[in-house]
Image 1: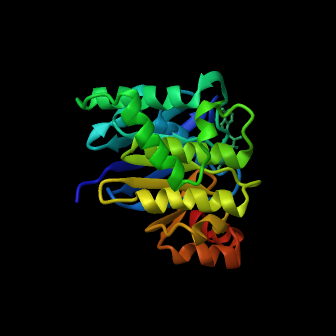
Image 2 (image 1 turned 90 degrees about the vertical axis):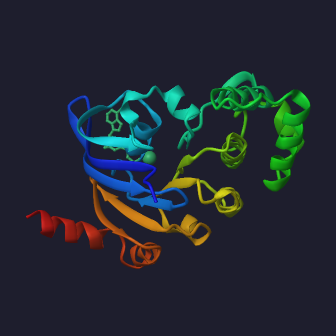
Length: 256
Ligand code: ADP
Ligand code: MG
């Protein structure tokens, strides 16, 4: 099968500090990949670069999405072509109603794909189904985007956005603390129910717990801007048991 995302030897820096030091990841449609790593290892940097933040200097390497140079596309274009990113610290958009925001985003995408735009009635039917699935109250629709939301509510809202926008590549950059089991389960449900043969996920997490609910096909461990190990889902359990130190020791040895 063709590759969806191909990251080769990616090096990136911020203000002269090298943060990513040669990342290789290949994701095929239908796959779930997890990136695990301690705080500061470069996980969000990688996610931001894929979704289109221009705060980074790409100093070496390439990123291809469906055989196109992803780095040539604007963030808007990436979203229209099916890349969705849930942020570690979701933005608050006061005064912008959730329903309005989602309908506008979905219709922009449908228009881009040459599909007809959904009218208010069809959109409400779709969104109500999605809300039910996520056990969310309809009052969400009347609230502003993320304003006054608790951490768990923001995460649910992002999963609602994700499933409504039907991305091809969804990147979930999780906050490492403060998520209760309910919020974890909602995220997992969003991923598990919406995985299909055309859709891929990149799930970023600091800790193993989320991976009790989502079964990734591939796990990459990121330490200091490099992937030091790639393996199957059992790698999460080994990490839980031995800690990241186990791999830091290995990578230090192989680097010398
Ligand atoms: P993670 O998501 O794994 O915790 P990040 O990608 O957020 O890691 O950060 C990796 C490293 O890059 C950290 O040392 C962080 O301080 C640094 N960094 C990230 N973004 C910036 C920035 N905009 N300016 C300066 N340093 C940054
Ligand atoms: Mg991060």
